[in-house]
Image (cartoon, rainbow, N blue to C red):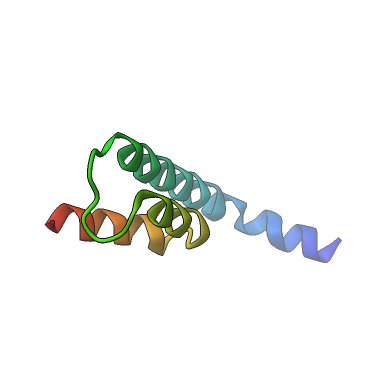
Length: 68
C-alpha cells in the first residue's frame, strides 16, 4: 500500500504532464500528416521518432521542421 500512496501523492503533478505530452505528440503527428514535404527525414521516420521518443521527438520535429 505504501507504493500506491506514494504514487497517489504525485498524481496532481503527473496528470497535467501526461496530458501535455499526449497533446504535444498528437499535435506533432497531425502536423506531420498534413505537411506536404518534410525536409530532414521521411514521414515514416519522423512518425517513429515522435512516437518512440515521447517528449524529445515532438520537440525535435517542431524545431527542425520549422527552421527548414
